[in-house]
Amino acid sequence: MELIDNACASFEKVFGTPASACGVAPGRVEVLGNHTDYNEGFILSAAIDRHVIICGRKVEGKTATVHATAYGVSESFEIDGLMKQDANFWINYIEGVVEQLVKMGFNIGGFEAVIDGNVPLGSGLSSSAALEVATLLFLKELYPFEMDMIKVATTAQAAENQFVGVNCGILDQFSSAMGKKDHLIFLDCRDLSGYDHVPIGSDCELVIANTKASHSLADGTYNRLRESCFAAAKYFNGVLDKTVTHLRDVIFEEFEKNVDGLDSADMPRAKHVVTENERVLTGVAALKSGDLKTMGECMQSSHYSSRDDFGNSCKELDIMVECAQGIDGLYGCRLSGGGFGGCTVNLVAADKAESFSKELATRYQDKTGLVPEMHICKAADGAFGKSF
Ligand code: ADP
Ligand code: MG
Image 1 (tube, rainbow, N blue to C red):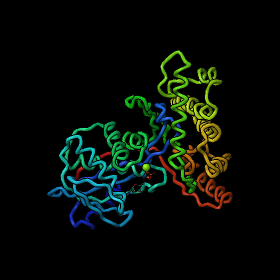
Image 2: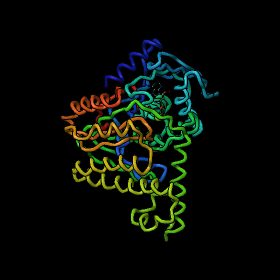
Image 3: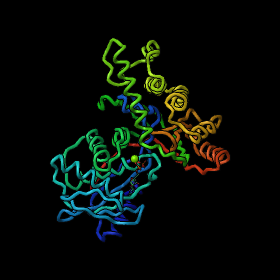
Image 4: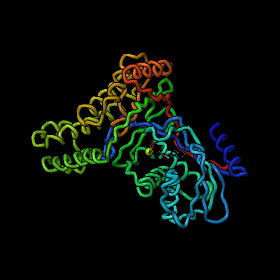
């Protein structure tokens, strides 16, 4: 992999000795299943062919020194004295992973490393999860311990939740760790062992379009949406003849029959989650039978459900989705991720991906004056570590 060679060359340049190991982890995109994770529902995602690489070597003692090529700066920390840092914030993702490993009783010693790669930073393609997963697998090469890839994902997530302080769900790290070339990842968020790889074939690509809009989501909004979902689950637990801990437990028929007693603000949000879970299952079944048209329709209605019911779209995301309509090669598109800005994901025939991407960018720029950032991606294998 050329990226690994480049990262190793940077390491040698910065630290003056060759690297002995690396961790490599892909970014990810959510293809279906919007805000279903914390409702213990279903998700379809993909690891993408953009990677974070961390390479380096062991050193004596308990000091870690890491150089980030993206920023052209180095930062260090003591493994026995982990502290959150403000200046070079990116070091916290490394420290967070070290903290989890130390807590688990693994003996992690000093190291020198370079972070490199081509996942765009802060674009919603989860460079943060890729950095955590890559770091974990790099350290596993240097200071070997046993850990399966699902545990790698949950440990990386814990690093982001607890040390970095971002309350992300499991989607990001799981997708980075568990990707498979030419496949989407189906995940049952209630039971992480209930995952599956669903083929999309090599004749499909994922065109990711960053709107370049970000409406400060304010955690307040995000939390209100979550609270609405939990309140609706509580309501259904009271009226249905079964235990409902999360909206995952409600099917659309039950939703419709009992909708009248539901709080009017919670109602559309719950409707989105209930229908979105069903769209993920429909999409998986369609993909398994090679029916990309139905899969595309599921993506399309997912967007309208986020826009009209859940309420987490925005003007720019809606324009990006509308601009894509009618461009040759498109199966379906939707907003991807938290919402209120960020990216849309477009499922496109591989031989049309290039022309599709150009046309979409032109249309969007004409309409908004904003220059979108386009990424034509393939579904890729998950993360790995390697010693040289
Ligand atoms: P996203 O995960 O969507 O890319 P986040 O804001 O969650 O956005 O994470 C981006 C942050 O992760 C960056 O600001 C930086 O601190 C860290 N990061 C990710 N990739 C790298 C990298 N290659 N080098 C240094 N820091 C990185
Ligand atoms: Mg992130």
